[in-house]
Amino acid sequence: MGSSTVHKMVLIIILFFASFALSTTAYALTADTDGDGVEDTITQTATGISIYHPNTNQTSTYSLEPGAFINSTAETDGIAGEEIIVVLNDKVIVITDRTGSVVPYRIPFSRLGTTYAINTIKDTDGVPGAEVVIILVGRVMVIHPATHQISYYRIPNNATYGINSVEDTDGIAGGEIIVTLATQIMVITDRTRQIKTYTIPRNTTYGINTVADTDGVPGGEIIIALVGKLMIIQHAAQRITSYPIPDATYGINSVVDTDGDAGKEIILALVGQIRVVDDMERTVRNYSVSGVYAIQSVKYNEICYETLPFGASRSSSFFIEEAEQRRYPVSSCFSNIPLAPEPTPPAQEPTKPPAQKPTKPGHVFVGSPRPPAQKPTKPPAQKPTKPGHVFVGSPRPQAQKPTKPPAQKPTKPGHVFAR
Image (cartoon, rainbow, N blue to C red; front, side):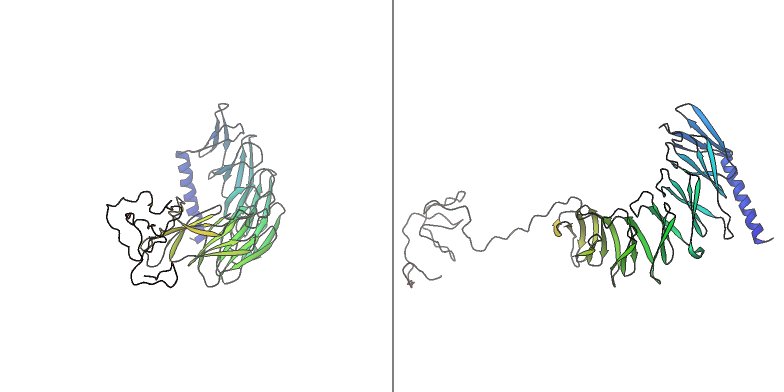
């Protein structure tokens, strides 16, 4: 018995048990399929699909081949009411319950295999209604239920590939299909049936972090992390901007507008440093960090991180205001309460405090204790500025005439030696 025969027998057994499972259990979900604003109940059995409409108390039925199952529901023709996307081993069926139509789209045969997978259902051509984006061996297939058309996009050399996402990268209605290969990134504009290829340096690994507007021009940029640099594809301008990060391990923490200007900033975490890439200005701002740290939150105009300096017993939190490019400590990244400055230790020598001046000689400040009657002594290292004045906190003297210290002759009248 050949290996192909064995594979066929295994497939038959799998399909038999799948059919048996469908015959004994029913699969149900809800969606508004007729566009009346009320969700309908969709039930799949071994023989087909039934849809109950509570608004009209009627049920629609659609027969299906064995092995078919519901992939999803989505609005694909630009008219109110979701279509039901059904998959079989060699076709995709779109059921429009509003009109009762059932349209099959056959998966093309390939000598490399007919395996396929629906990647997503999103608008790719700018026409109202979402398209069904399918991964085939060696090419990408796009079904347009609104126009009943199919688009194909060939992958070079039948290479292994993946669809990263479908996002608007040029500022025009309809998302682009972003395809990743070993040394290339392909951007498929289904609206114009065009493909743009961007080369990735050889002998390196890369990963698309996200697609977001970083330059303030309509359309998202493709943000790519590579070894030794950050790479940004600006598909609207069809160019690449790179930011070198030599000899450093880094990670992309987030992509958020932190300075209030058009375009989001890219927040990078490096050893001993937080780096903010401002792609609109083509500049980089660095904030040094000591010890081990973690970025706790990134919002508009704020980056908050917690750090544990080497040798420290407790962590500290700091808040970065990107618009002003200033940093200050806070009690916590979650409360964002600025810490009070460190208290100033009291001076060793008492000084005359501002805004508290005795009105006449011999007067003391409010709140000072009244001492018992006794002869005052001159405190060490405290020289009164005028006879009769005393320092804050010194005992109140009895009225007396100041005397000239013995054995100290001033050089000029009124001057005395420093004691």
